[in-house]
Structures are given as structure tokens and as C-alpha cells.
Length: 158
Image 1: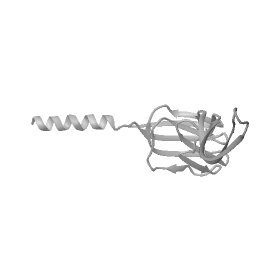
Image 2: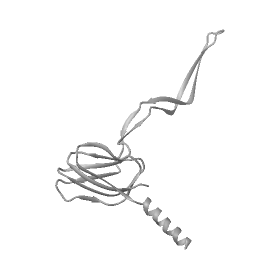
Image 3: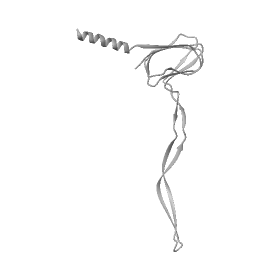
Image 4: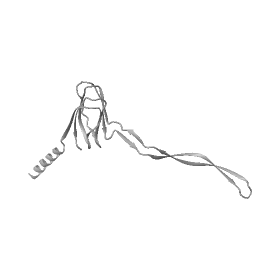
């Protein structure tokens, strides 16, 4: 009996942790926005639009910054050394082949992050339904190219 009660309690705890959450918008404007600000597993997505548009889903920010860094280029070159004797005034020139490293500073750059999912939604059509689970490890960002988007997402918390 004790084992049965423990199993029922475990099942209740697991079902409480595995609940699905939903997020819905109506007539979203153009732009980038954070839908869920934590790691989630996207279970379902239904999108309708009043005009043809592209929907981009990002795992985190849509841009990232690469910090400035030093790049080293190594190459073979000739090094010429000239020596003038103080006593005799004779000039000696030596040519040696050396391996030379040159440091170059590379400036910081802002780059676009590739979207995790891109959807092409037609105007005034049946809802585009996407039901393959996707894991977002940072947070769920959405960008749409034109306004008038209605969106319903279902997600689980990891």
C-alpha cells in the first residue's frame, strides 16, 4: 500500500511539472519582440496574417557582437642586416630567411544571428501550424516583417 501511495504521489508530481503553457497575440505590429524570457521547448505554433510576411524565431538575441581581437599572420621573409666596422669602415650585409609574425588588430563587429525557424505566412489563409518540438536554450524571440500577425504558441518549461 505504501508503494502504491508513493507511485501515485510521483505521478502527480510529474504531471504537475509537465504542464504546457500557451501564449497568444492578436494583430502584432512589425518588429522584434521577446515572447518568453526563459528557456522553453516550443511544442506548437499557429500563425495567421492579414498580409504576406516572413516570421523569424530566434534562440536569444537577433544580433551578436564579436569583440575586438588581435590576429597574427605568420610568413617567411628575408631580413637584411647591415654592419659597418668602426675600425676598417668596411660594410658587411647579411641576408637571412626568417619566420616573421605580424600582429593586426581586428575591430569589433555586430553580426546577425541566424534564425532557428523561418516561416513564410500567406495573407488571409488558414492558420499555418507548426507542431515539431524546438528547444530554445536562452529565450524565445520573434520578428515579423509586416504587421497584422496573430500567433498562438504552446510551450513547455524544461
